[in-house]
Image 1 (tube, one colour):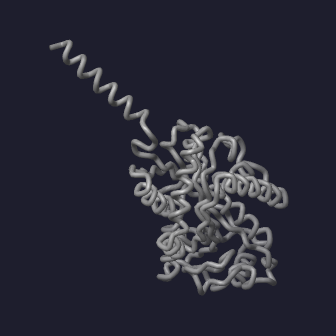
Image 2 (tube, rainbow, N blue to C red; image 1 turned 30 degrees about the vertical axis):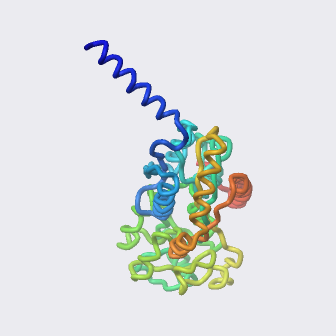
Length: 323
């Protein structure tokens, strides 16, 4: 009986090993999101994960790993096994902006990853507490100048693009506002609604319902934003404030650990691009003012490199030292 039991165990182990080494994918994938649940990055990730689960025939499980402006989650992706079963959401913050604004980032935005695709790009919207005594960007700037240091400017980490954009806005308008860091935008919204913090730059994905319901003010958007048709462009609303060319944008993408097999990368890219460019994908993303992209891995890598150079020049212009 003992020999029979050992033989059965050996067969089970052999079957398990064969299953692990079978054609990819033969088990669930993990999609690491470097920010908390409920924010714009998380919403995009869950939308893409659901469609990849359908097309790959395996679950794509979202795992939120927030902290340090998204670099903790990005580092978890970089250090994962390059076997095609761990992928991650990359953003303008976690990749090109982080290495410009933060010292000792534990990964290289290109060398540590296999870029898969840029999912889409979106605008920034300057959100404000409903208690603020200002109804336009010009009135907000005037109030901030009359009350230097009184307003708090929320951000999701000093290594993020949103923080860099907030410094640029303050520099262009000559205003002084105190910076307050949070782990994610979903944690900022309650404080913004209650007036504990004053303003916040975010993407419109999660904030549109709050603006439409009147729970938050929206002073301006950096690029055309279909979900907020009544909110003016900075470049048009306040040209006298030196904001004519103030038009930063933000992107979301997919990456895998460096060394992930190219056929795996290309399959995920193809399935993601097909979804974001589909009628259903475009409709869903339009509701979040997200412009679908679906670029190739090489095109995505080139976009990351271009942003690194652009953000480096901006940080130099602002005399920003990595923290």
